[in-house]
Amino acid sequence: NLGRVLHSVCEGKDVGDTILLIATQINHGKEFILKDNELCLPIAKLNMAAGKMAIDSCRHKTAYAYLEVASSYQSSTQLHDGDAANSSCKYDEAEIILQRILKEARCTKDKLPSYFVLSQLFQAQGKVVDAYGTCSSILTQLGETIPDSIDPEVVRAMISETLRKYDEVYCDDWLGKKMEDYTLRYVIRFYLQMSQAAFFSKAPHIVAYFFCKVAQLSLENGVCQHTPQVFLQLSHIIMRSGNNIACAHRIAKNAMALSERFNLSDQMTQLSLIFINAVGHLEWFHAGVQRLRVCFDSALSSGNAEMGFFCALQLVIFSILSGEKELTSLLKDIDYYLHLLETYKSEISKKYLLSYRETVSMLIDKGEATSIEAKEYLGDANDPGNKFMDTYYCQQVLRNFWLGYGERCRHFAQKGFARIPQGKYFFHIIKFYYGLSLLDMTKKKLNCVRFKEVEEIIESLQVAVEHADSNIRNKLELLQAELHGLGARHNEAVALYNAAIASAKKSKFIHEQGLACERAGLYYKKMGCTRDALVHFQQAHACYKEWGSSVKVGAIQRELDGFNSIGTNFI
Image (cartoon, rainbow, N blue to C red):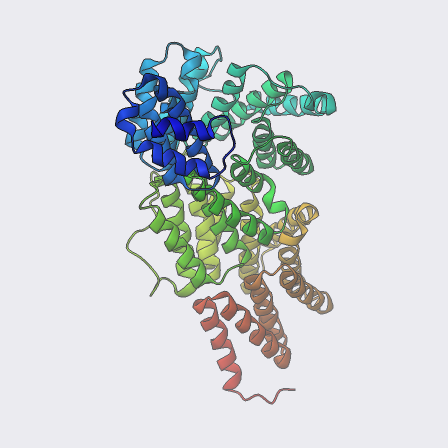
């Protein structure tokens, strides 16, 4: 009777957070309610509403409890229960719930939500082959043709055709055309989910094919809440090609603007991450870091652990590239993420985090006091489908450059050039460090071929700086300064060293400000300008100390000690 009275208080009314108290009180009489068929359904709905209220306020364990109770009242709530179990990393329990729903469902249409959550569950556990297979099977049942292999030339033509359709169709009329077909919306979702799995298990051009396919479906059938993600992914594959950079940026910004037309609070973390992955390097790295911190917190608080750790991965690499965070603090952040992964199981995220940790550890003290037992795992280095090798080569370039191992830096840079698409932001970062390393070789022994190669790198950075000035300008100016220094063009070299230092400082790249000061100091030392050399080495020392690299502080200190040994009364 108390249950009936309490339910009558809130039935059909918005009682706010009070619904949590009412549901809790009612659930004390669960065993009696289960015997009352008339009360089961409305009390199940009450608990679902309480669960949703808890989710909206980021109380996910509480939400899980309400949804679990609701599932005992009514089997129709089982999908929500499975989704909540998945978000809480209770993968075995989630799979049991989903398989039970799939067994009870009558037709494919009824099974679509459960199959989609199941594919997400596989992806979260790193079972990308199972995730891909689940999506492929459902799409085939829905009439889609999923090819086993695709000619890369066909995909290139498809990208061009998709862009042509986009420019032709994207207008206010199309934006006002809603995609009403329930099944088609799930086709879109399964293609997007399958593309994510394909990224880790298929060749890049196959991933591009799926994104083009889903983009064309959207252009033909109108917009829905998944359309922003579709076109963010399209911008990503355009950017990877290295062509139409401005076009990719425009499509990505249009997609984010379109997301504002829908209530996409549950998708904003994922959309922001895709935007940053696709075109975030065209905007200031530090802005991306701040956005990624918000995305990580939001994803974890909403129960989307997999997306949260993808944000963490991008956050760490942007922090390394921008020098945004002192290295020992960054190392603590990485260890915190690794600790969380003991609960939120994600082998994919762990693999990349260990690689980034190795880099930071080496930059601090060559791993002498900061290394841990767990190490990065490469897998089959000769497997062209091993996506981790792209990251491994990039990290090796960073480590070996900063530690002064020029030959190893160049070796891994050349390996990276053979694998990494020109449109990926790391491509230009590797070119920068590779170019400086080539110049170091050329200083020892003049080589026209290397000289020409550096000039080509500078030309490519001149193009890149048009699209990403805040992230590229200081790198371009430093390469130019070094080249002019080799060519005995003193005035030009000095002006460009000063410009590189100023640009790095403006972009708050403390490590690259230190690098420009160090290179300027070495140049002045070679030219016999002792006072200028000392000033720049002191500035480099301060920058590297702020960055937190004991390795680089030690290297500069040795330069300063050399000055101290000959006195400080300079001409």
